[in-house]
Image 1: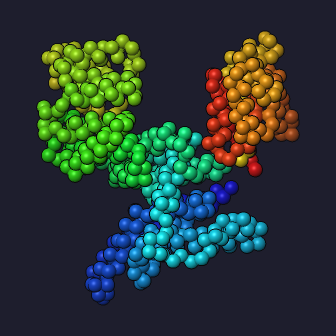
Image 2: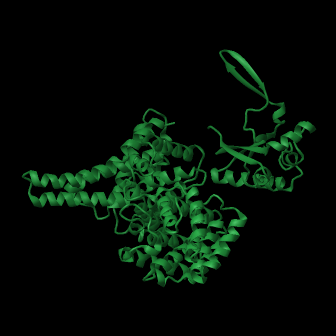
Length: 461
Length: 129
C-alpha cells in the first residue's frame, strides 16, 4: 500500500524548506569567516531568500498541480521537495527564473515523469507513465502561457480535498498544513502538542483514505459547494483558534498557526472571489489577530477587551479587516463569519471601551442568531444587550438560558451572570456566581481571572 | 469505484424482530428483498436514483443478527458464537453494492436510503479492488 514510501516522503518532505532557511543563515555566517567576496555572499543569500519565499508562496501550488497530474500525494510531495532542492542548487548559478512558480512546477513534473518511468520499467505499469506522457515536451515559458487558471484550480482542489468531511477533523487540519502550507510533520506535531509519530500516522491514514475510499480531487459541484465551503472555512477557523489559544510561552510554531490560517484564508478569498463568507473569515481572523498581543498581560493573565491597551492593537490588520468585512457585507449575502467580523470591527473601531457601540453589537448578534441559533450565540447577545440596555436586561436573557439548561456545564454562563451582577453593585450575588464559574472553568488563565474577580467581590476562592 | 452500502438498523428494531421472527416493521419497509420493493416510499426514491445512475451491482436483505453465527478459529479450533459480530447499537439489515465515480456519489446514494434517513445508518465501504 506504499506505506513505507509514504513514511520516507513524510520525513523527506520538510527538507527543502528547512534547508532553504538554514542556507540563508549559513550564507551570512560564511560571509564573515571566508574569503568569498561580500558581494557574492550577499547575492547568494538573496537567492536563498528568494527560494525560501518561493517555498512559502509556491509549495501548495506545486504539490496541488502534481497531485492532479499523478494522482499520487506522496509522489507529489517528494517531487515538490526535489524541485525546491534543485532551485537552491541552480538559481544561484543560473539566476532566478522570471516565474519561479512555473519553473518549480515544471521541474517537479519532470521529476515525477522520471520516477514514474523508472517504476514502469519491467513492472508492466505503463499506465502510470502514460499519465504524464502528454506533458512530454520540455517546458517553454511563453509570454503568458502557462495557465494561471489551472494552477488556481489546483489549489482549490487541494483545499477542498484536504477538508473533505469524510476525513476526521484533525486529519483535515493536519493535511491542510502539510500539503497546502508546507509545514513539516514535526512542526505540525509540535503545533498540536502530539507526538511526531502520531501526527505522521494521522497524515498517512488520511492520504490512504483519500486514495482507497475514492475521495475525489476536485472543487465540489454546485449542489455540494455551499456545505463544503462551510467545511473549509471551519477548518481554517479551527486552525486559527489553535494558534490564538496558545499562550506567550508556547512553541513559536503553535503561535504561528494564526499566521498560517490568515495566509490560507487570504488564498481562499482570492481563489473564491464570489464567496463573501471567505472574505468574512479573512476579515474575522485579521480583526482577532490585531488584538492578539494585548489579550494577556506579562504574567500570562487574561486581559478583558475593556482593559486592553488599544494603542497596541495592530492598526494595519484592523484597517484591512474592516475594509474586507464592509466590502463583503455590501454583497448583501451575510453569513456567520461576516457577522462575527462585523462584531469584531465594532470593537476595534471604538477609540475607547466606553465608545463601543453595544446596540450595534447586540443587533449583530441578533442577526447571527438567525444563522447560528445556538445558546452560546444567545449568551453573547445577552452580554451585548447588558451593555447596551443595562445589566438588568442582560440578566433577564441570562436567566432564560439558565432555565433552559443547555449551558449548565459552560463556565461563561455563570461568569456572565456574575459580571452583570457586579455591574449592578450586587457584590455578594456576583461572588456566588463567580464561584460557580470557577468550579466549571478548566483553562488556567481563565481560572486566575475568575479568582481575581471573585476576590474583588469580597468572596473567598 | 465499487462500494458496499451496509444498511444498518437501530438495535431496537431487531428486538422486535426476535418476537416476529422477522425484521421490525419499520426496517422491513426498507430492506425488502429487491430494490424498490419495500413499502417505504423513500426506498423507491433511493432505488430510482440507483437506477438513474446505473449504479446497482447487487445486494441482499439479511436475516437478523439473531440468526447469525460468528466463526473464529483459535489454535486450529473452530469457535462458534451465536449472534452477529457487529456493534451492539445497530445491526446490518441489508447491503447494496453500487458502482459510482467516487465517494461523493456513494455518499449521495447512501444519504437517500431510508436506513440513513430514519434512525439507522449506512456504512459506505469501498470494495478492495
